[in-house]
Each structure stands twice: as structure tokens, then as C-alpha cells.
Length: 290
Image 1 (cartoon, helix red, strand yellow):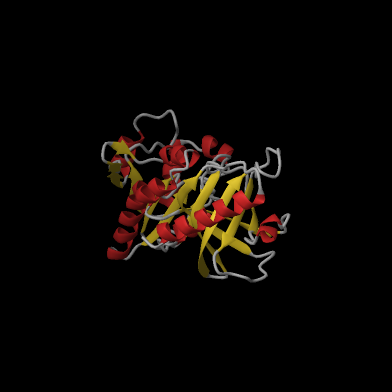
Image 2 (cartoon, one colour):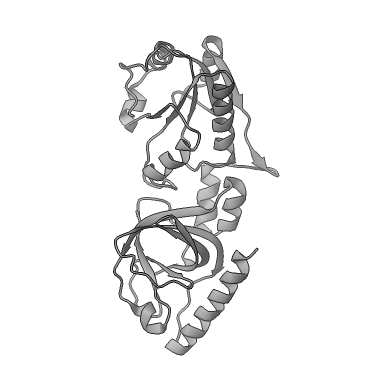
């Protein structure tokens, strides 16, 4: 559902709303959403989640973010966008929409602003609604944020992302026909078409899981330009599924990156590459059994 300032939600039932970018669904976002969902259930009110639309550089696709948000069982899931509409909506218009929608309780993070340059939005909201401001969540002295997760992803620190997200970083895509070089080497891979507008992981070899048709498999994933075989700058997303031999072209695959094993290398022969791949598989099994 798209936000429309001129079309409030039905006003027959009291509602509680969680508002935020919810870009990465890290532990801070989860705290806002969990408290809002719990409040709605205890008070038998409808839960509204209002989130901002995807932009280039986001961590997850729009559909994946929606799937994560739906875990909180909102009655209304609303995209506050497109972006021009966000900036055109005044604070007064937004507050009127909330009141006309019978929203009495609001959950937001402590840094929330209706408009980027506003400094007193929380005070104004508190004067007009039952406002719950959720403190910043930290790991040690570090503030958990989507920006931090993007930095970790660019550094290949996917195991650290899991600690501040509660789940593995993942991406999805359609399985497409590749050059079948892996099959020739004895390690067939699936090639994934990935949305390149998202923030992408550091190039490297990762211990991973792949889910297809609802089944989760252990795997090794290569995200690289394949320096041994080409001098192209095109990054390819290839996954070797352990103990798997099925035709899955055209299907959607979800890849969870668990831990970076090594950086990409150039090998002088297929024999040396095969030896290294076997090491990668052994290391992957050790990581995934933890």
C-alpha cells in the first residue's frame, strides 16, 4: 500500500504505528517493530508499519524488506513514497493523516524526524500522540545502524553482520545459464542475476547457504570477476551447492553469506584451482557445522 496524505486509513479501529526507514532490519529496527507489535496485540489494536521506499545502495530489495516486515504481522504495511512525495508532505499534513487514521500510539527510534531538517519533531509528536521513543541499540560502544552494516558488507564482515542483525546477510536472484566452467572442473555452480543497484558484498569466497523451493543447502559462494579466466571487471555471483545435482535454471535462489573464507586469487593451472576449491569446501563444512 502506498502512503497517500489525502486518503487516511479507516478510523473505526484504534491503531499503533511503527515508523522508520527499516532499511536493514537490524536489531535497533527490530526493537521498534517488536515493541509496536507487542503493544498492538496487548491492546487489541491494528498494527501499521510505515517504511521508506528503496533507493540505490540499499541492502535488500524492496520485496525482501517487505517480507521481513510482514513477519511482524501488520494490519497495514505502507510505503511512504515515492521520495518526492515524502519531501512534499508537511508535518501538519502528516499529523492530520495520523489522527484521521485513528492512530493514537507511535513507535520510532530516538533519531526519527518527519522532515530531515526538523529538530523538534519528537516533541511535537509527544504533545499530540502516545509516543514511544526507542533508544539506540549498541553492540559494546558501537551504534548499530544500516550505515555500519554497509561498511561491514563492503569489508566482507558478514559474520559480524549476523551479530547485529540476528540473521545472515542474504541476496536473491534468478538462476541463469553461465559458462559452465565449474562443471568442467568438477564443481558445478549456479549463476545468480543480482540487483546491482543494491550495496554489494566484498569480492571473495564465502561459506554460504542457498535456499531453493523452500529447501536450504550448504554451499560455497564466489563473488568475483573470475580473475583466473578473464580480465573482465564484471562481478559474477556463483554458488556451488554441496551434494546437489538438480536442474534449477529459472528458479529463484536465496543466498545467505555466513563467513568470508578468502579473497579471490589467480591460479596458474586448473589443478591448483581445483586443489584450492577443495580447501574452500572443507573450510565451509567446518564453518557451517558450528
